[in-house]
Image (tube, rainbow, N blue to C red; front, top):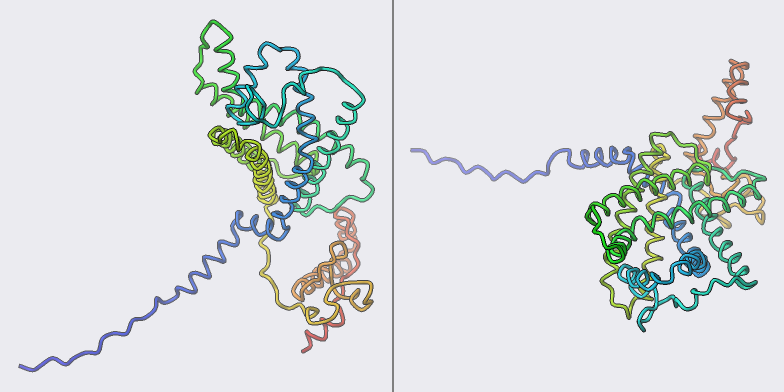
Length: 390
């Protein structure tokens, strides 16, 4: 018998094409709508915009809460016998919101029980409305930024009037949505204690109905905000899918947040209430801005370029102090410097406009009038031409 030869062990080989497949998956992922919306969300600095709205709401919280209290003041004075019951039920959902039975709280019922109207009340009312308008104005600018809409010139007083009207709509709609979403069980328990007859529907069914009504109302408020506050003319299908999803999602988060807040001890309630409001506004603004990016359905964003030749110069930004920097290709509104790829794309587009104008002048004139094209070419800068020659 012959002894078999020892064969060398096979060397472990890496899977062929793993890196290539991973790159292909990442390339496909970047073309999906959710990723394109996320890239628009990042490029527009929407997280910073949401933080700005949250801080504006935080500084305006005192005025907005005062306005809510003044609105509820008439209702409390009209029904003094049921006010204590309402206060206790509200504290079950938002612990420490109202001072009841010697427990600490943010709001003293004795301070808002009087229906008197003085000049100080008028001043507080005006200041509260102005505080709410600032929040609405910040929301309008943020939505237009993520959609890429330019600021319309000469629309200052129109924007202010639109902010005032939208503040009233959002204020009334927000109160109604909050009552439907978080006050359904409170209303049911109050009616069960006050009425001798039992309610025909269980509380679970009433909560489900309140969830549906609140979701529909929130969807209408979001769609109304996009269309008439930010002046966004989105496709109807994208508009209703995006606002409907966010409307029911925010309603679910609101109801779950109320259940979680009920387990907080009353001693920590004032701090928890402020923190909850700030976090809720911030999270809702982030979701709203991402939903706006999804509705915008932007094209795939190009990969970050590393061909900015001005980074090594002084100054490395566009400024009047250095007149030579004014000739760099840049966005005249934001001052952001274009990369060579962006400049080349603008140059190719301008050349297409020029050739269309030379070949078919009548057709180009109609298209230019329709799309408001100036017909002026965008020439590359001298520095980029030198770099291209190199």
